[in-house]
Image (cartoon, rainbow over all chains, first blue to last red):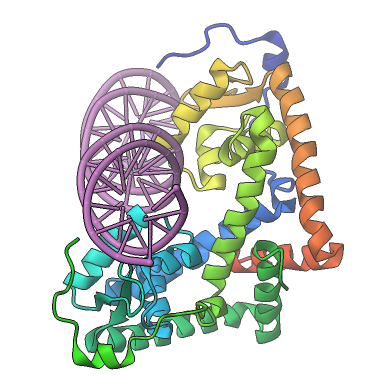
Length: 163
Length: 163
DNA sequence: TATTGTTATACTCTATAACTATA
DNA sequence: TATAGTTATAGAGTATAACAATA
């Protein structure tokens, strides 16, 4: 292995091995903690959604269409922070699975209204029930009021304008 | 454009355009909110760290080495959830910028102890000061005690074991 | 045999430019 | 001209397999 052949004298003297890693500074940062929490929650979410073959984004897309039938690609992108070119493939895959369908928009000839098929509606209902169960799992470590507070504060972080 | 040539009668009748997108269900999920908050905080962090040419991961790596001189790649990976092959390139880049140096580990011939150069130490001190300022910015929307609560609850989410 | 650091590589996610058809 | 959807493509981030050196 390529190595430094001349360690500095200062280091020979000090060179401590780190027993336990001190993360105290990073843990003062909201971004660090939020990212870690998001990764943990999403990991758990991935497991729970495996039976439905849905990744978190797929779930979000289907759930939004379910609660907003006729929503356009553009609206989905704005809501979820996805770029239009990256949404196309997801919609194609979900349409091929016959979970959703693109229909002409009633008033805008350029746009397509997105709708769930009956199969898609059933899948989303089941998946949302599972998702709610996963939240309850987190709630078991956090208490219902703590969970409510956590979500309220997170919204304040990413929705600076309106409370 | 390729379009559905025969819209179903049912849709012609109903087909509503969505005025405002209803995200109420997704907003009940911790993962969704945590991801959004993390993305918002990290976006702001990216801006603030631009003068130092540090991405969030680079900052985390340098900060951890600063507070844990002699830490190994393996320990960095475990702490930050990075895979060893993906850390190598980052360390090479930071070493080429003369911000850190790899030194032989005092007791394990396989491992390398990571240390900051004087220039790296100065950069990290400045960057950490800037990062603390960005936190204060979030604190302006959130109140110090809310900020403390938020971080405490986030830790509970991603550190299920110890409180 | 197991582990550290590394290379090579593949896969996913995200981002940019440009085209078409409609407004 | 501006916008919705799409295509192609480039880049960043993340993943696995395999190797040499050391424990």
